[in-house]
Length: 531
Image 1 (cartoon, helix red, strand yellow):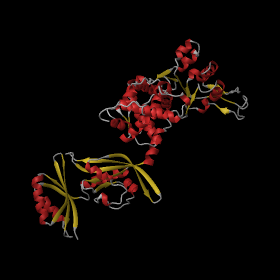
Image 2 (cartoon, one colour):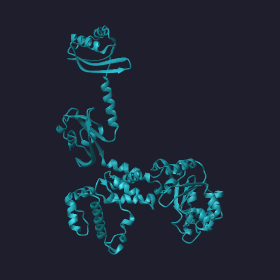
Image 3 (cartoon, rainbow, N blue to C red):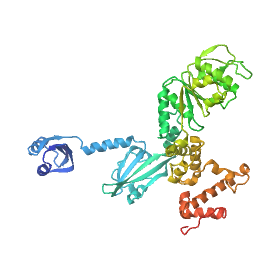
Image 4 (cartoon, rainbow, N blue to C red):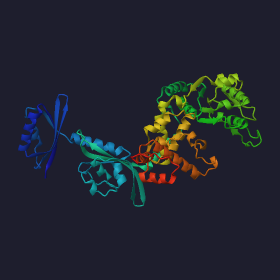
């Protein structure tokens, strides 16, 4: 029966000491299973994992003999080698990751597999390290291809265990050494259901904060900095900006930053007639008007107590309602419709408009006293055309949300697509950008979304197409076919050959030729020697 012992030696002259240590170990019939050397400043430590054929190894005599070597300062027994500790820490980290991870060396032998990968692949707790990947009962061994320099990304796989079917995305990468030689490969497995749940949670975030604002332009950063500064006050905030710039998002972020304990309640003043808007804001008592609930109704000012009430499009509010609004803002008191009782409310008011209120005051279309009351802290949100440098970040953000909602793999916009986005004037701002990105994500069948899939509203208008039929009465199939013809035509015009046009469109060369045969002579093909 053999005996194992692990030692830590502090040495001075490593070269001289090692020759003497080796001689001493040989004299005592000790085999070196593993050795590590660590240098810390001027000190050098040698770690040895030794095996003795003798079950009665006298460790005291061994230590005494080692310490007699002039170049050894100290010798002590240890329980674990440094490499063992590193491997343990590494395995703990791997097992804490939510993705499955496994790796192989250049011989195709498994070198790493974490807890999640074992569960995904149904490997159990068997000792798999060192075994050939091809010898294991795994559903897929594509990782071998990485040893030839090939990689793959987000490949969809299915695994059936019993009556359960699991789907996951696999990504394989090559491992190189310092000389760029392939020494192994690693595969990451992501559960598709978990990805969808996480993506949906992010895409449907209930409250927006300033940290969620996408963009690095100076105009946006200045607006955010000012909004953050005044958010913690109780003053009325007026958010100014064109339609589609994200005024409600700013209002929500201000509410969150303020630390208010109450809810954030938005209402669009332009979406309701005056009578209904008044009852929504102030509430009413039972029997106040025909059709009123007998128990009455609490208004939004009361519902938003200790919170924030966001009045979007306040410029569309009628003059009588503006007068009532002014009193509530000034005194913090209101009367429900049909009641003489005053109710005290503690609600922060945030307003927004895309109109020029100052000009409306001059035209006597908006109360001057209310204007100055709500204009205490005006926050101006820049239009998208003034922050074109933010378009790549915004496009990526919208594309991520759309892919998550549609359950599609992650895709990217080409440089040509981004250039086309930056060249647009963006009258609809962020709302228009999101629509364009969603349209592109649906139209593009390729992992790379090209400029051919970036379609603005005016490009979809029948009046912009000479081959348009009867406008809105045209059947959907005909409209889709006409749009497909146009996209193919643009791809052909921007590519030197039909093969490259097919790659741009994310289809095979044969599929493109079939489309051209179908649409000829409608599609103006670009004949080149490379077709």
